[in-house]
Amino acid sequence: MEKLSTYAVFSLVLGLVLLAVVGCNNNQNTPGEQTDEQTAAGYIEELGYTIVVSEGETSRYTLEEIKGMEREFTSENLSELLE
Image (tube, rainbow, N blue to C red; front, side):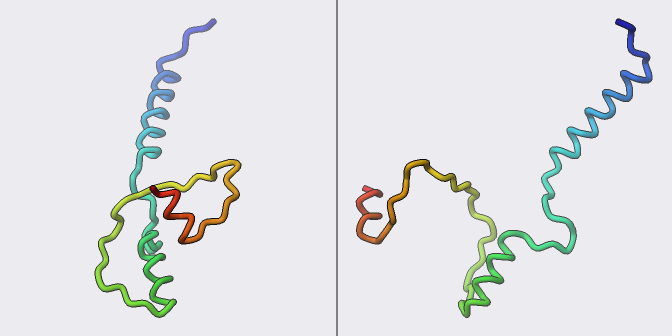
């Protein structure tokens, strides 16, 4: 196998560094785009509610589907599940 030239190694390292910097960028919204919190607040206000206090993002979670869980939730059986 041939040795890689210095230029090829440099290009590879530079590409990996750029990929890491771009991939780890925390800014998910482009300028002018609304955040999830702003979108949710707009929806709530369109329904006629008034937001008294806005705390921004307080926590983040992901909902996942549980296979085989086809039971309907009502206020009665939900309290049983939470116990």
